[in-house]
Amino acid sequence: MKIHNRIIYALIGIFLIYTLLFSGFIYYSISNYSFTDFYKRLEIRAITAAKITLEKPKDVSVIRELRKDYLEKLPYQNEYFIELENGQPKYWDSIPQQINKTLITNVIEEGAASYNNHNIFYSGIRYKSSNNREYIVIISAENYFVSHHVAYLRNLLLTSIAYTLILVVLISLMFSRTLIQPINNIIREVKKISSENLHLRLKVPDQNDALSRLARTFNDMLDRLETSFETQKNFISNASHELNTPLTSIIGEADLALTRKRTPEEYVEALKVILGEADKLEQKTKALLFLAQTGYDGKKFANEVVRTDQLILDAKETTESINNKVNISLDFSLLPEMPEKLKIRGNKQLLQLALCNIIVNADKYSNGRPVYITLGSDDEHVIIVIEDNGIGIPSNEIQYIYDPFFRASNTKKYVGYGIGLPLTRNIIKIHNGTLQVDSIEDSGTIVKIYLPIAKNPYQ
Picture 1 (cartoon, one colour):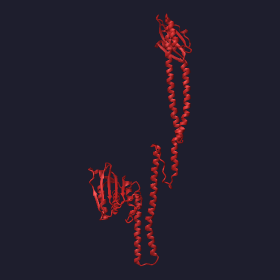
Picture 2 (cartoon, rainbow, N blue to C red; picture 1 turned 180 degrees about the vertical axis):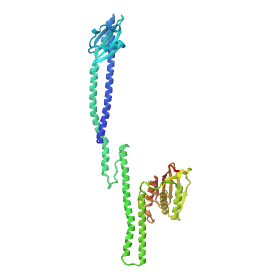
Picture 3 (cartoon, helix red, strand yellow; picture 1 turned 90 degrees about the horizontal axis):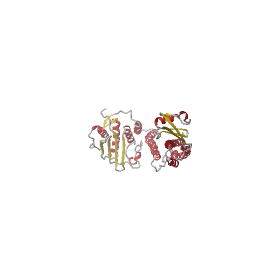
Picture 4 (cartoon, rainbow, N blue to C red; picture 1 turned 120 degrees about the vertical axis):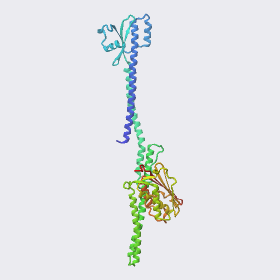
């Protein structure tokens, strides 16, 4: 069933149920009130009739005048007087057939009672006259309010329900179209977007409601898709260039060596060039494969408790073994009082590789200036900050730093493959951490690493 029809049926059902319950309550309340009120009116007439008929007052004309003015005769009104003897009707056979025997019994036992037969209502009282004789006085009449007014009310309510149903159907149609139309507009706009025009975005309504949040969610998804497509394009472009360059050099050197006979020394030089380019190709291929491996969830890697202060010291030692001129300054002044807040859970070799990549890059692009490493923690994370005063990253290129093989435009004179930072981010990611890079061209770069503190550091 379409959501358009579901909305209509739901609104019709809700309004119809509410109208039926409300109308039923009104009908029941008024009907019940009319019964109670009419019985009271009959009881008053029974008492009045007993006073006039059984007591026979001297000035009966006054009572009759009051009765005429304030107690108008009801439709089909009848009066019945039944004499009692020893608490029972004196003449059972003389009681009219329309008088219910149960009514008489109830009046004898309770002093007053009432009942109705369709629209004819009966109300009886037990009355003791001034000469100590007991009677049952019964007044019957047609309840005109029930037979006419309540019937009119019932018909009026049924007619109102019918008109309400029609009105609700029309309102439901208008409401559902008003509600569904913006969704249909979003669907039409989304259908226009493909891989060729990922720059298009949905119009976000001014109201801060579910539809505006839906449009913003779609736009956020399109932003991620566009970034993913751009990353893929950059990867293909950079990878093809990085892999084709050594292959072209190898093929070109081999073709050149085979164009004519050469001396052994020339062949050795050619082989050295080929070997060097093949080594570059191997390094790039291995880095690319390792990058792909770290893109998984990391469950296959060893999981152990690692102290981050020792991890930094090991990374510093490894970096200094690669380049003994590196200038690294450690700042452990922000270490927490509890050593457990320095422990994380993960793979020590991978984490050391990630730190070494960042430290080597900071040293390489700083031209020998100091590299500052600070270690601290908060309630949930160990925080490692690596800062340099190097060449920085152009602001319009920082969004591409995690693309494999991408290198900033100001790094052409530096040796590198553009794999280190994407590899580092993947390693941090599989350890449920976050990598944040802030950089200003010609001023330096700050790299912040957030790693979750081990929950059970002693296991």
